[in-house]
Image (cartoon, rainbow over all chains, first blue to last red; front, side, top):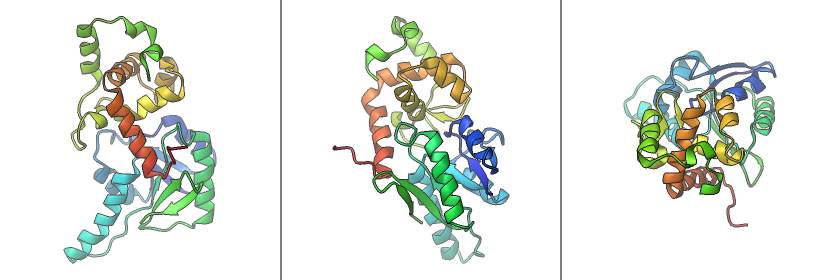
Amino acid sequence: MAALYFDADVQPDFAGLLSADGNEVVTARELLMRTASDAEHLAEATSRGFIVVTHNGSDFKTLCIAWRVWRQLWRLEEIPHVDVIAIPQRTLLPYARAAREIGMLLIREPRLWNQCWYFDLTAETWVRKV
Amino acid sequence: MDRSTTPSRIRDLTDQDSDDLINRYISLHPHRTGIANAWLPQYGYSVWILADALNDTGADVARVAREYEIPEEAVEAVALFYERYRKTIDARILANAIEFNSILDD
């Protein structure tokens, strides 16, 4: 089972769907991080070792790339970020199905770091973006 | 969301009352650009996320409020804001759909 961190835009009930499957789930709201930037969400989730779940794939994908590029540029110690799982909005992927798809992704892909996964609506499968 | 799906309780508000309701709950996001990324700072939600939820529920304000654990009045503010900036918010919703490789032309 996985530990998941929901950013501020994800519906709170969705946490219940995933925690019912045995995952540990925290929300940005519970951690009083609802006004945090995406960079702060990624840093907080990484410090806790929780996979980020978000609707905002574009910005998090950029952050994941920048995380590694800037550390190399500044010759900093290599510290991985937690995985990011990006899901479309509810009109395109209802939360009940999103929960099932995330569950299958977590079974298929053992817990890894430094990755960003998107649910591709045309292929109807997970695609690794970073 | 066209005007016919705007919740009836807010459909007949004066412009001043609409402005007051919007200003009470919605502002520009400090880290993201423009109307398309406006948010509800008290609750952390983006307007476009809640507009998408209104589309998904047939503009059911009570249901969206319950599901997102926010006051109905805040969802009404979103509905008014969405009505006012419909094309901009819809463009943000579509941009996110495209990001996930949704085919929009069929």
